[in-house]
Amino acid sequence: MPNYHTVLFDADNTLFDFDRAEREALRRALTERGYPFTPETEECYLSINRALWHRFDLGEVTQDWLLVERFRRFEAAMGGQHDPEQFNRDYLSYLGQGAFLLPGAEALCRALAPRCTLAIITNGATAAQRGRFERCAVRDCFSHLFISQELGCRKPERAYFDKVFAGMGLSGPEGVVVVGDNLLSDIRGGMDAGTDTIWYNPAGAAAPDDIRPTYTVSAFPEIARIILGDEPVPHSKTEN
Image (cartoon, rainbow, N blue to C red; front, side, top):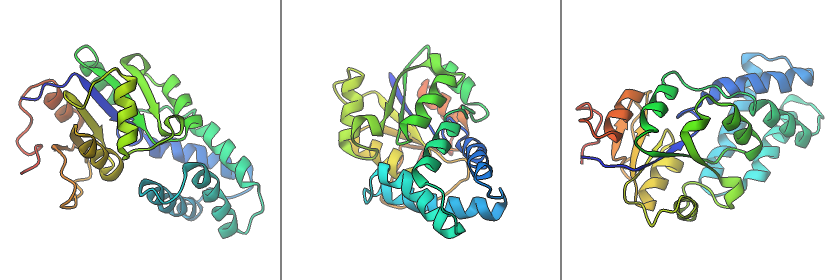
């Protein structure tokens, strides 16, 4: 049976409703600059942003460059001339106000907190993540917030997880489980660091053959059952 003393949670789209926060922040930043907030305008930004974050996950670009470059490319696509650096600052400020949790996330954290040490591990921008963390309803459940911008390395790099272990006073990955929705940054990162992993996969997506989560779940109650040592639902454990 699992016996976990430490749970490392990804933030965005694992505990936090990032899509909602992103949409609200983007709406404010766009309308302030005179852009219509339409599905087409939103998709223009999102397609640029997704592509750049994927390159970041692969280690091809830096985060500081990415954060500004996405708005530089958006301005070019829209034919605008607004300062992309100020665009990014405004957007991150608004994003930091969007501390929306996914339904069931608070109940999960409060069920786990008396039994385990909980920490958040995130590649999100410091300006947004600090603001959202301080405002969120489960702030008291977490002992640590590890942000890649502050650590100088990112998920899925082993150096990132080594700094997390050191920051929590852990000698290694034993008894640690990583919970996240991103197969590359969360699950691959946890695997390479030697932890067990729980892939939060509500959409039922397929994983590539080279990434093997310890568990795959579609709902928060399954995560609680696994971590607290109860029998997981039969379909949640990945076949070996």
